Every structure is written in C-alpha cells, then in structure tokens.
Length: 123
Image 1 (cartoon, rainbow, N blue to C red):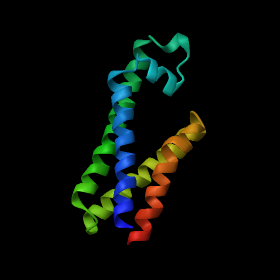
Image 2 (cartoon, rainbow, N blue to C red):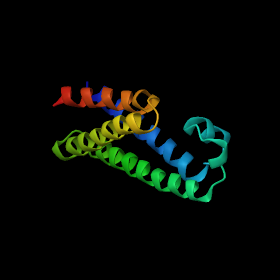
Image 3 (cartoon, rainbow, N blue to C red):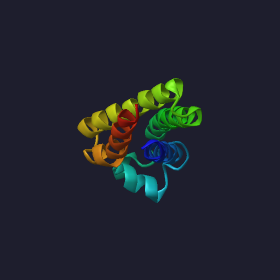
C-alpha cells in the first residue's frame, strides 16, 4: 500500500508540474487553450497571461511540496507533508470545480482523492 501511495502522490505531483509549465510558459499553445478552454478574446490578453503565470507558480508549489514529501518518505514528517499538500490539491480541485470548470474535480481532484485515501490507509 505504501508503494501505491507513493505512485499516486507522484502522479499528482507530475500533473501539477505539467499544469505549472503550461500556465507559466506555454499559455499561448494549442494544448493550453484546449486544456483551459480560453475564450478567443482572452487568448492574447497580457493580464490573463500574467494571471495564468501566477496560478502556475502556485501549482508548482503544490508539486514541490508533494515531491518534498515523497523524498522524505513515509516517516512522520514526510507523511504529514504529503498529507498536507494532497489535501491542498483536493480543496483546490473542489473549489475550481465549483468556480471554474466542473471537470477539474475529476481531472485534478480524482487522482488527489485516490492519493489521499491511500495515504490515510497507510498510517
């Protein structure tokens, strides 16, 4: 179960690194436009790009925290760090699902919820 928890936490970390890269560096790409469903009139708006870059930085912090927890392992400190950051991802996914796009709950929330349940079953 510990291996499964590490794999799921790793998947969530990789997902947030990917989102960070899209939001910070490739917001003008076709993939980002499709992923974030940007309306045409906002695609080239500099303020929107800045907001996405800021959001990307936060996604990077989530990924960094999860990776930090993975590196420390499932000792008490590593476990608590993983648990904290996974809960942050779950809360962010629920909030994003209600305020932005319901698919966020599935795309970002489901992997994080699975990781959370697995982490809780380990300790």
